[in-house]
Image 1 (spheres, rainbow, N blue to C red):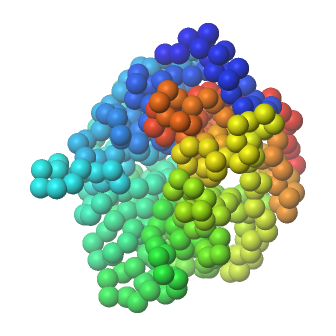
Image 2: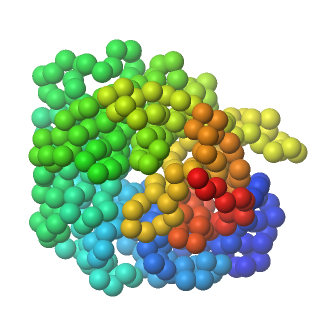
Length: 409
């Protein structure tokens, strides 16, 4: 655990505006944090898998001194970099990672969803699995303890599908429904992609009521009717790639405003390689015809920085994800948006005017030792508006306070 002195030193070395570092934990040297949630006093950090762990649990009752209480290792040649919690049910994905072992001696990877009983919030007890063929399960969303909405490989499809999994009996989770991108079922002709080098597969899903907002990597976003979970149906589709960069990571609805935020992940080291990746503000008031209204401002280094542009800094620069406004725990706002931008850290945006999003705060920690630059990866904001951040490789978990103006409608 980092000492208060170290936190003070890190705060002093950070780029920050309307924010301050409250606490930090290096996750016992397993600093490759991916998705994280905070439920009650506990933070649950899923790991990328370049180190040994799948999940870390931290007691954050005192956010200035988070305490590591449990770590669970990942299966060999498998990453479990996503975590979802509803009541006493915790689930993690099982997937072959992009850095998987290769060759005849490589270990077999696990693929699917593993379910845990979280009656003791510090001691998840494995109770069941949904096994799938192929690479496995990637991003997931579960808030009701009944259905998990996941991006998964599935027999008969050559790209990831949107799988609705029934987890109401967590010892025996099973398929409830499947939606796929037109052209990705075996034997189908491609329909939605028409430019060389594009990839069409489901990256993530956020449902809202009887609609699901599906991120399709280079295929933009689809709005899907899930009134009948066994037979999801496409309502509409929007894409901006090309001319802008693709890889839509997250499509987060702001339902009271008729908007969706589409976050295009940076996946390469430079903008020249990766294209112009943005967080798009999409108007879905007429859901049959979604329209782009604006995009978030591009972060720029503060005065005195050694870089004129974050693209000059080592490692990735650009969006990764946003705080996702979960319904049962955490902070919810359709006007104050928290997003992660890899080496440009955390950015906080006032979306009061959806045609002109405005930055109102940021936090960029110093580079973890030996890493060249931070790679701030995922974000969760709790009920007290404390911001929990992970670094993708070695930085661990940061706890940051927003000190800027309250943005209310």
